[in-house]
Image (cartoon, rainbow, N blue to C red; front, side, top):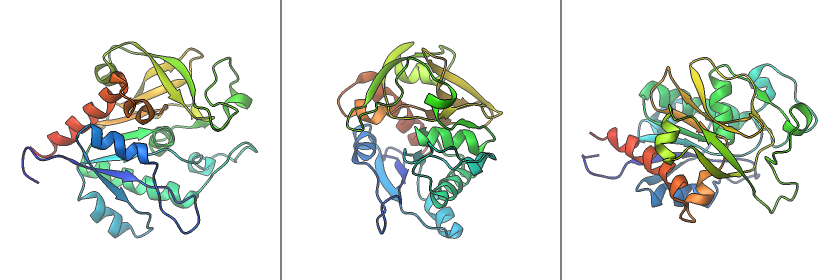
Length: 241
């Protein structure tokens, strides 16, 4: 692509529904809203194809979904784990590996952030209510309701530059979270109970993760959440220069 064109954003897809490859529409909408061209990356276990696909995009968005298999970080699943799909874990790991080799920006959302952390050697709380109970509701008991709570952002972080403020209300749909932070990363935002809500790499350029779902609020016009996608797209656009 030539300078001035919109960057192509590779978006990881889910394979949770038999015979379908899909992604939630608001990820796509948020990318389009921010000026990116969405490119859905279909599941395959062919590494050569994935390498070729990643070479076509200017940035990678790792989306949410089922739990990352605890086997990916050396643990046995607890009974509360759900939606585990090791084929998808390996698929997303491959996308992340090729993206980092290509040195393109990577943004992980919810599961995507957890996957970044485990890929680089971190671990997860498999179930917050069981392993780290608190008064903060990270996931509503009613699946039709999205929990909302505050997070506090470090001012010495790229997330702060994305959001433009230290404290924001976020959309939360997770029961797992970062436990041991991967080497080469720093935590950049926290919930009131201390749970890590965002990470960024200090060893690899342009790799970020957020535990919350900015796409849900971005498409509704929330300026702070739009700031996350705007920053991501600008960094992707830098790849065109």
